[in-house]
Image (cartoon, rainbow, N blue to C red; front, side, top):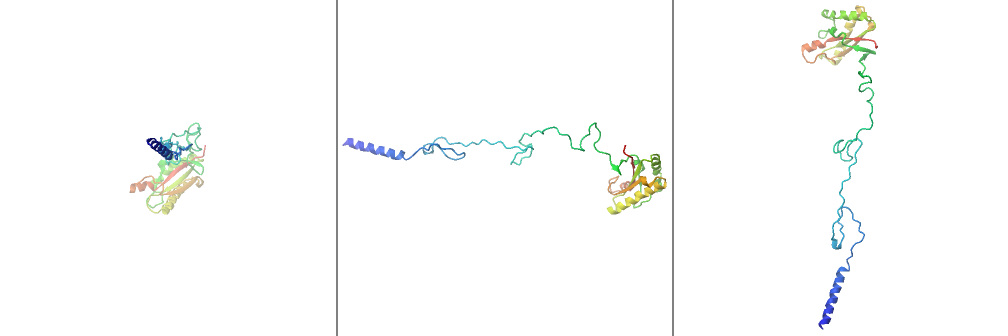
Length: 229
């Protein structure tokens, strides 16, 4: 009697074990997805699959910046050195053999020499375009130089102080230049060699809002024009 009861209990225990473990199957050939919570092993046990978090190196533009980062060139990157050794653009840098790459300022195709008659600037009274007697003597050395070098010409610039409108000062500067031209023409300089222009108040000789500065700006400048060599 005891033996049969033991057999029955053993049989029930075996059936219970089969019922619990027989319906669970271990997955096979599972492909892990990076970042997922998939685990291999009964009941989800076993070591977790850790996704690859190694950062992908950023792409670098030819200018040295990072694509999609908004970082300026040279920040957090190794700059790419320029390729080749290119010459400077035309008109820049020093030309072969040294010297200046910029031609001197020209007027009517002739180089301008402002230093030749810098001491002979004619000054005018306020709102006047008459060459004063005290200024006439400055023209004598200019007349002599032009007669000695008939190939040269003269540019006469009329200037004003800052008072008055821009249009008025432009016209006043022109009258001042013409007044000097008339003096030189009467002294025997051909009018064909004399050029006039007005800069009005745009090129002051002295800065400031005083009578001393205004007196320096009411003037006629004489610029020597020489043929190109």
